[in-house]
Structure formats: structure tokens, C-alpha cells
Length: 540
Image 1 (cartoon, rainbow, N blue to C red):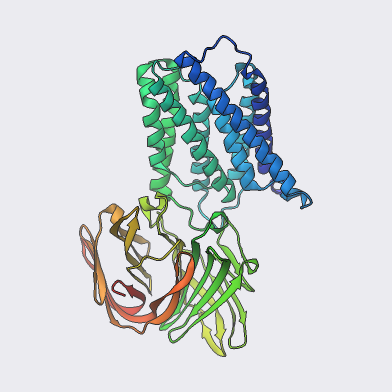
Image 2: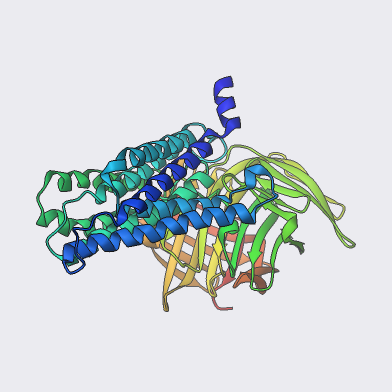
């Protein structure tokens, strides 16, 4: 154990990552020297021209990567040594030089490239094995992520050794496959190291790469061409298994540091004990004018809103651990310490083990780029202990139940219905929204019903149909049907994001009287009137 602790302290994973980049740069610089030695090639020959063009592009990418490293070092001069190289810039440099190696390599120094790729693989392996997953996800996700990135990385150098096809069209397809694979790997690599060894599994990307290289493989039935299908097919299989068994997105990650305006990322912590409900909503916002954070505290009778500047916000990128001002929100609990001229809110709540879903509630839509808002269910239910004091009133949550979800994007949907209920061993979450996507609109639905250890997902991506009524909603998938009917509610005005800014008012009833009825093939699973949180913004 002392040995592994020492390795963590030295951060050997990042050290090996740096070694890999500089080895690749060395290989590229030597290749640049050899680029123009081959005088037998002619630009008038299509195949020779394609080879020379790839050499020139590889040369440009190498220079770009080297320039990025120098720029980063100069820019960070005088800062602490461990921060002399920005990690994001570093990964961009790594991606550029891997792309250069993928497009062109010289057999004379192939050993140097092999050493670099091997070092990078060992670096990823250390990141996978040595990261503590106790607060984030199962160790299986880390293993799947390593194999997935390994397959992507292996595909890049193998692509350049595919037998040259007879047509320029197939050569373009092969080059495009190299470019897409290298770019996707660099982005995935960044998220992988940032999140402690966890990846998002893209099935669509794997299919695109295979589709691009198939024409070249079919036209040239060579052994090395067929061998290239092995890592490509394995990449697809691992992506499918990872998505099926573990879901796509890593919900606990914080993505805000990488985003530009407009952007928001917020968490919803619900605390409930009987009829007593308090919701805590920390959030992070990037607008064209400023970057700021907020905390909203919602009680059954009133909501409080507090804004903080950017320097008062901090979030770990690989676990749920958010600090806003003097308050913290994590997977282990929340600590509130908010004081101003009018309000005094403080207290500490501890969480039991989070009840996470087996799959990402967004399903396939979690991989869609440029979506207006992405939703995540972090914990369907967990036990609570501790208390809060809000302006002199004590809220005791010993023996209570909690719930956590999150949203991120640029805006909340303009029309949506949302409800959440905790009752004994039952947890219900239903969200129906009108979703804009590239000028088109469609009605999307995500719903989770957890009863004890049984989990039911009803969503648009698995065939569920939904209807929003004046006082509730209905969602059906096959013989499973959830009916929600709001009996009595008292909406309280909260702020919600529009283009990153908290400029829209919405009405939430944190403790409304709602009837929930859920039926499956075997009959009615439950039918009760309970305390549910609701936001009915369908016709607002």
C-alpha cells in the first residue's frame, strides 16, 4: 500500500504522459528532417502527391504542437512548477502530434514511436488502476474506459500501414479516418485523465471509423488491412458493452471549466423528512458578461437566492465536490454557511450511500452534441442525518431521505414538466420537455421509477410515449404506465437559466400533494398520494 501511495504522490501517470508527448515530438522532428530527402516522388503522380501532402500536413501539425508547448511555458513563466504547462494545452499538443504520426511516419525511427505509444498506454493504465473510485463509480467503468481508449489509440498508427488503395477517393477516406480518430482520441484522452480514468463510450464514432476504412479494406484484401479491423471492431464492441452495462456519461464530473458562454451547470439536492422538504440548488454560470455562481435555498413557503463571484466557486472535475462561498456540496453531504444582512442559513447534512442508476437516464441522447440541456440523475434516494437552521427555524433531517440530480447546457427548455417524489422505498422522477435541436423540435421524456432494488426506465429513446395534461402527465412504455396528477400545489418562484443567465422565473412546488400511479404487466405496483416536488412549465 505504501508503494501505491508513493506512486500517487509522484503522479507517475502524468509524468509518463509527458514522456510520451516528448518522445512523439522527437520522432516528428526527426521525420521533418527526412521529409524532403525522398526525391523520387513526383507531385504529378496521384499516389505520390497524396503521400507528399500528408507529409506536409504532418510537418505543420508538428510545428503547431511544438509552438503550443512553447507558448504554454512562456505564458506560465513564474508560476509554480507543477503548473508550468496547462493540461488542456498539453492534451491539444498531444492530439496534434499523434495526428501527425498517424498521417506520416518513417520506418527508420519507428522504434521511437512505438516507445511513445507504449509509454502512453502505461500512463493510461496507471490512471485506471490507481484512482480511488469509492465516491464516483464502479471499478469496472475504469477498466472499460482503458480498453476503449487503448483500441482507439491502437487504431491510429495501424491506419497508416494499410496498403495504399488504387483510387484517390479511398485515400481520402483513409486520411479522414486517421484525422477523426486522432481528434476524438485527444478529446477522450483529456476527459479520461480529467475524470480519473473514466470515458464516455461512443458507438456512433466507432461505426463512422469502420465505415471510412471499409472501402480500402474491401478493395485491397491484404493481411494488414484485415488486421486493422480487429482494434476497430473491438472498439465498437467495448463501446457497446460499456454503454449497455455502465451507461454513457459520468454524471459526477464537473464540465464548466471547459465551457464558454453561454453555459450553466447546476445540481438539485432534495432533503425530505415526512412533509418537510428543503431543496438546495448550487449552480455555475458562464455568460457573455461574467462568470458567477449561485445558491438557491427552497423551503415549502419561500425561496432564497444568493449570488457569488467566480473566485468564490470551486469544483472538483472527477467527483461531486462543489464549493460556493463557505458552503460545500458533495456526494457525502452538504454544509451550509450563508450570512448576509437579511439571512442566516447554516447547518450540516450527511448522506448515506447514494442509490445510483445502472444506466445514464439520458441514454443515447447523452452523446448528442449541442443539446440545449442535459439531465442527469445522480442518486435516486439515500439516507440523511443532520439539520439546517434557516433564519432561526430548525429543519431536522435525521432519518430523512435525499435525492440528487443535475443539469447542464445553455438554457432550460421553454416548455417542460418535472416532478420528483420520495416515499418509503419508492423514488420517482419524470421530466417531459419540448427539445429544440438544429431548428427542429421534438417532445422528449425521461422517467425513472425505483421500487426497492427494482428500476424502471421509461424514455423517448426506449420507445416511451408521454402526454402532459393541465394537472399532471402520463408516460407509457409497453405495459408500463406512470400517471401523475397534481392535487394541490403552491408554486414558489425560482430563477432558471436562459443562455447561461438566471433571468427566467419558474414556479416550483417543493411539497405538493400529488397522486402517483404506476402499473406494469403484473398489475398496479403502487397508487398513492404523496408529497412531490413539481414544476409545471408546459403552458407558461
